[in-house]
Length: 100
Image (cartoon, rainbow, N blue to C red; front, side, top):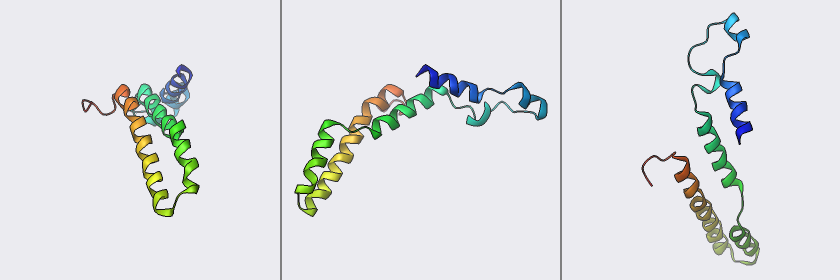
């Protein structure tokens, strides 16, 4: 994760060549003052969203064996499971403030 933070810092810092050709404001480069740790937290959220747990894989494996109305329930259950898996990551990142 530190490598990603180093890359983000390098992208947000103004280079000497840019300062010679045009005046940069204090917005922090192309990310406009975003905190690199916040971007790392957001990236971990996306990683968590894209991962599939064993329980989700089990429900998705059962899906072809069910009737159409029950397939929709499986889809809803998988969405809820993904949301519940995100709660600890959101709590640790501090993105939701004092809600937890």
